[in-house]
Length: 172
Image (cartoon, rainbow, N blue to C red):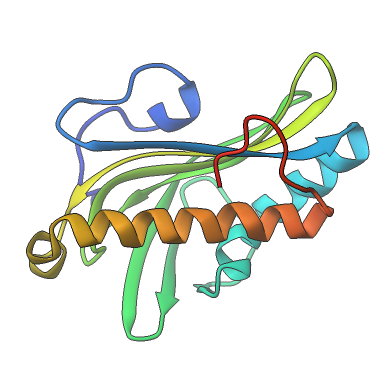
């Protein structure tokens, strides 16, 4: 099974330009500071903590693994994805997944914990997408509202995991 988008696989983690022809999303929340906060948040993200905390079921339930196909479920909605990149270094922990056939959207989404030079720890979600199914095309702008709702739930789920609060620059 192939990804449903041909452009820029892994670009959501790269930090540069996202491909044209898609809606772009970039939101973040400050989680706190220090190595303990960074590691705890990173571990949560790599264990599907954002998705589970937002109310999604993840199958299989293994930790994030590069190249793994997963299915997220919310009620009746089936959301098949493939992990296209995983990053884990001294300043970034996270992953990106791309959409597979059957996903409501076409595109890619990254979930990334970063540690800045001032020791601030952030959780960032970055995505590009466009409708992938008849019902998301029919929904039009309402589909974008659903995506923003899910993004806020992801951000809050990881913030709760580490006890982070809202602060300057938060985009919940």
